[in-house]
Every structure is written in C-alpha cells, then in structure tokens.
Length: 136
Image 1 (cartoon, rainbow, N blue to C red):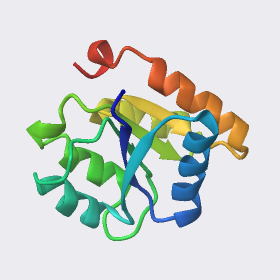
Image 2: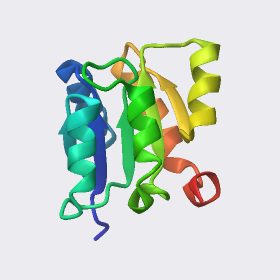
Image 3: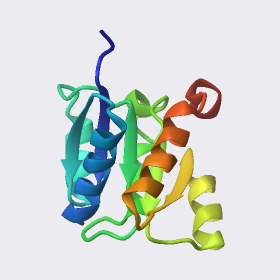
Image 4: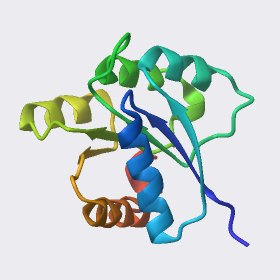
C-alpha cells in the first residue's frame, strides 16, 4: 500500500485549506495535511524536525505576520526542504508576482481556482510532474 501524500498548507484562509482537502478527497488520493495560518507559524513548524517531511508545501502569498514571499525566502534556507516541491498557491495571477516568486526559488505558481473541479485538475498536474528534475 502506498503511503499517503503529505501536504503542508500555509494559508491564513481556512476555506482555502479546506478546498485543497476536498479536492484531495474528490481525487481519491490518500493524504495527510499539516497547516499553518501564517509564515511565522509555518517556519516554527518547519524548523521542528520531529514533524514528517511533507511531499509538497503549498504557500499562500498574502498572509499576516510574515507574507508568503518572505516565508519562501526563509524556507529556502532550510536544507531539509531543498527537495520538497514548494507550490505558491495564491489569488494573484500577476505576471510580476509569478516572475518574482520563481526567482526566489518556488517550484510552481498556482493561481487559486474558483471551482473544485479546476483545483482537482491543477492538483493532478502538480502530482504528475517529475519533481526530481524540477526541485532537484
């Protein structure tokens, strides 16, 4: 039996956290999720090496305390997560944001879809990528 996919979702909007959960259930993919509601809380959890290494990190850009861009910069300094695909999951569709985020080291930029079926398609795409080539 395959191990469940482990997601770490960093987003201050609980509805967006639940949206990913619902999409994973719809896709019938076994999964476990860890959550943080802001960048500061996320970094605290990520620095705790007793938490399981996630298969994917989904990071929102617009959050209180420590925004997604600053959080991304700090995550990139943590060697333990160097091979973990870091997906920016945001309402922004700005080309400028996308370019800046990719330069900062994100592996993928995903504008939050409005329908669960769209998110399912996006997740299928994310999970089917060869992350060893992208993140390695």
